[in-house]
Length: 103
Length: 238
Image (cartoon, chains in turn brown, blue):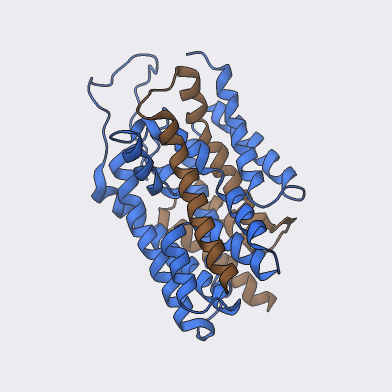
């Protein structure tokens, strides 16, 4: 039980430090045009990685399961210009249905 | 989700002088609400998981209050649950959250006040808020970001409390398919980012890097390494 509390405190401190580091280092200094260009491209890189890792991995394994079908269905809904909440509903319903059918 | 009209001649500067627009705290909070719904579910699953691992009721809630980060908490809890030590669990959480280092560097110039105040404001960075408040030109809408985070953090803590208290009484959230809410959300945000060809190139490269690293690197590292694809921006014309 002590291990759990110690881990909680350490993870809390580490997470806060990671989030604080950028602002502490940079302060109000503006970045140059090249750094700005890199930062503008961080979003597509980060989001692509998060989508893929959340969709086709479990721990350190690549896994194809109902999540992939759900996210693919969401992609189709997006291409058809469905509203945001409908896109999400399509993803959730597809995944839940496949899991239900798979038992 | 409508796209704004953009001037056909991209080179010309049609922006009025003065600080760029920030949609404000309230608009951010509204934008954060759908994410908050998904976060409640995630929080409940964390509470249930921690309870099953023998954390009791207080520790999971304290964890969510202090750490404020789902991905890091799941990583640490699963390592402890698998018999790992405090050091391994903390390291896993650090890897998983290492993406906040480049994200914090990106957001820093858009925050307010001195370094300390900025470091405190930087705690309000979470994935969805960061992406939604990103203007796409290297700057961020500060109030909108903070506003979007408030409902998500509240939902995370409240969800954890429900899961920790109710424990095994609740249905498995995965059976309801709710775990795809996050990748689906990130996909929606990604679609907004892919207007330029260079962004598409970066996204493809990031995806390849992330998937290739998953079997070999500890959880969290593939996402951080994928962020390196943004370095393609170094070859841009100022």
